[in-house]
Image (cartoon, rainbow, N blue to C red; front, side, top):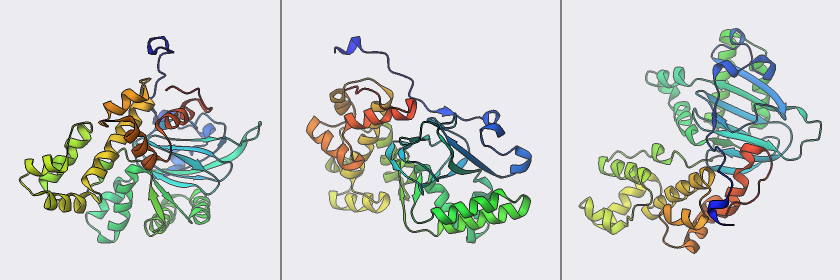
Length: 315
């Protein structure tokens, strides 16, 4: 079908959750009972299962059903035991695909909290440094493995207490999470914010790639701009970002392509070139390697986060 005859693209931006929408009838604790740490429990379907973000952190545990999970630009599957920590502003949604017709009464156990107290405390207390580093990684969404049972027991204990005891139990949970070594980062949308580069030249380059990932950059071009030989530049960039320069550029281009796939109705071929790839075969290969699905399948699956059902392909 010609592009001009297609239906207008649906709104792709996540809904921002406001304090006024955190109602007890939806599974939230009343503010007077919550304090710094708020427990949430709900089933599926529910108005809370939507593509959204909020200004607080959220630790989210799935205890029933399986389906598709969406965290930033990451799309994957979930089942009972799926445990994810989402940083503030990171959009997310979980869509159950095997829920019975009558729904399920208890699918999600979540804890919402502001990280400010812990991050400020880390400036004074070195004991908090490990936890603070974990919270900073949460801008990508962190999936923890082997922690589901302990997390559920912690949720129940936290929910049953208030005041300082609740905060102590919550800190115990954070300690366990920050000590967990079996985890993975999900979304690449904030990769530029996560680099630990201490060299101003590399920092500037990372910001430049984030701003315009499609720019025609090569190791030789950038190394010459920075007055380095290619070997030294390659070592510095990998030490600073954890990946090679070509690999990093490909990651940023695929991330940009994900945004275009989710937010526009442009042809996949058009998005390939807009993202900075010079041929469709290489674009498909790099996208599949990084996301585990083709660009067309990513677009098809992304409609789940809005409608709760697979939409027809938009190629």
